[in-house]
Amino acid sequence: MTGIPFPPLAEGEFIRRLNRFEAEVRMGGTVERVHVPSPGRLTTAVGEGTPCLLKYDSNPRRKLRYSLYISRPAGHWVVIDSLAANRLMKAVLRDLGLPGLGADRIREVRAEGKWGNSRFDFVVAAGDGSVHLVEVKAVNDAEGGVARFPDAPTVRGARHVQELAEFQRLALGQAWIVFVILRDDARIFQPHRVIDPVFAGALEEAVGAGVQAWAAWSDIGPSGMAFRRWTRWMPG
Image (tube, rainbow, N blue to C red):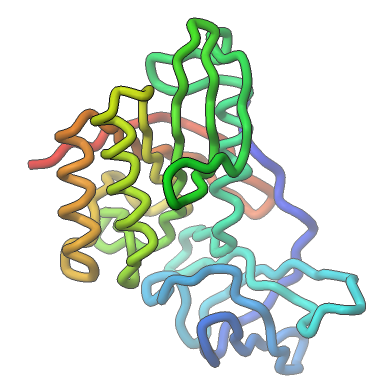
């Protein structure tokens, strides 16, 4: 089964967000200041009293010893660390490939490929000579069974989508945007038009230009996540 393991994790209870990248968590009767490895607002992922699991980092140069890794609001698993989405996608590309482009047809996968003014998460070279740009978005916001991206306005995200559309229009290859769903209580995906109508509009235009947009769903637990299925996103 294609997936990724999680590192050893310690239990805690979320108290409050201090700023974009720091929070307070109660661990074993003490309050610990921890790193938050996600730029989003996380309003549906954490709140006061939410059980959570944290990753310990032994690097003595780090300011904070722990990083928030998973939360469990209302009994559902939510992965906070946005880098888990890229780790899972790397495994999927290696073992399964993309919808309609199996792993047996992929010749090379390169991370952090540059095109235009941006770096994209993966550049995939197929055996037939075609080139694929793949941008991965980590989705840990959901409400009423609907996973949504973004949960905070993202100028950078909209720019990525616009550049994928330009790549597609120039017929340089196939562009993809993959929304990796990092929670187990959602069943469908939609762009979050209320939070960021610019991103939602850019995504619609990009799909209209031929960019492929897919949601990647997984089974999530405290020890790891395993890829389960694809669903394609289309406007309307």
